[in-house]
Length: 337
Image (cartoon, rainbow, N blue to C red; front, side, top):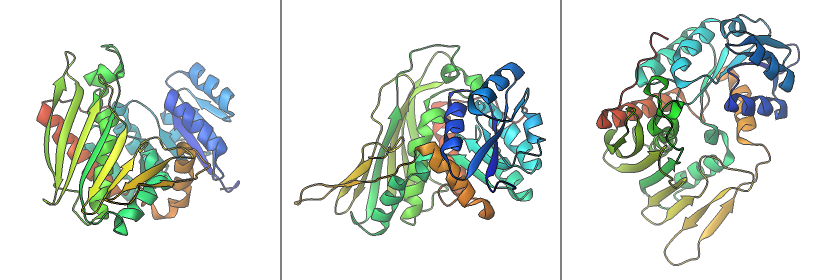
């Protein structure tokens, strides 16, 4: 790369694509090379706002752009699989917004495409790139709360019912489980791996409320890993929930008050019987998206990042599949997209 920076193309021009474009500008490792939208006018407006040299009226032309090294896929869930595989075949490195696809089978296809075309692939859980998550993992590995046995994690909000919204449309992968329930599930997978439990083959028992449009509006699940680590997770798009993680060990508890959107002054609290609670604050000047952009560049040669390895992606999607199946929730497959 002539400018020694990773040249990014963005597929999509929505709110999350806007956050990503800002992060690329703030990063030390990337530059914004191109943007694609189904509307050329929209792409041109986005490119003008964020200083992208090229705007494309379609996603395929971004993938054929020789000035693009990597693409960020910020399309609706249902389009992730199609464009991730196409990008891999075009030789572009990949950052795919979560969930990587609608199901584990689609996720495996994307991973296989990345592997066979020798490109980098990362599923975009920004919190995984933040040092607060590194601190949590380090504390657990160091035995700060003894043997870890249980996790509670929740992420939910009340969106206000709108059957035309992607959150409530099964054809667009709507519902809480895929939109934000994936966060506590992915955290449970991370912690299971950290303590040496197998994240694959987890036993999932779930329940919840399926609304009139056929998506899960609020739901909870108990996930058991190797019969020795249990995660209780909750999600919603029609119910305000805590955004919190609590990890329980044999000698104490770690509470993460802001696990999904940590900021510069975020941190966690260690509680043990007897002594006063200990608060650990993590000082990180960069925002979540910028940390993720730099994570991609740092691990590009390895093709996958230790922050969210491919096995974690598959394990997370397998649990999400089982959780939705427990509620009888299904979405049109993205396989033909």
